[in-house]
Amino acid sequence: MSSDAVVFVVDDDEAVRQSTAWLIESIGLKVTTFTSADEFLENFNHQQGCIVMDVRMPGMSGLEAQEEMKNRGITLPLIFITGHGDVPMAVRALKRGAFDFIEKPFNDQLLLDSVQRGLKHNSEAMESLIRNKSIDKRISALTPREKEVMMRVTEGKPNKVIAHELSVSIKTIEVHRARMMEKMEAGSVAELVKISLLSSQR
Image (cartoon, one colour):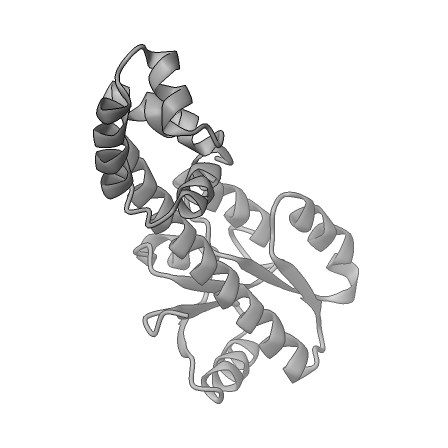
């Protein structure tokens, strides 16, 4: 989990906002608070972390904020805090991609557990994004012939068969294969297959 991760607490009720912030800070996490969704959106600078937001607020509601975040490409896990009467609204938010919702008055540990899961989810998503960009960069460095060799190697075909299929010598395949494995940063065929699978799953 990144040490730069921030928990953004968005609530118009000052008492709830401050008590929530103190609770989260008590386990050593960084917290930034906002009095409204508008204020959050104006100041958010694409940091890592997660968001704890009240569903019902004056001005922009939690659901409206969720839609606006989607439009702006803000993908942080969103945990809604909701009063009992707002549960149907929170369920709609979950269906639209919210990470969790917690009813007031909430159990402190329940909120902390949800925040920890949200931060872990965000951290894993960032790692996946970085890994995918790295894989894309490696694949783009391959020549067309190296890509052909890679495809056949991941299918489990030996050099002799690949050479026959591509109408070249085994020695030529060995050279292409060595360069391809180096560019893909794969130490074995098994590792190459795993990288290839990660690429094809997107």
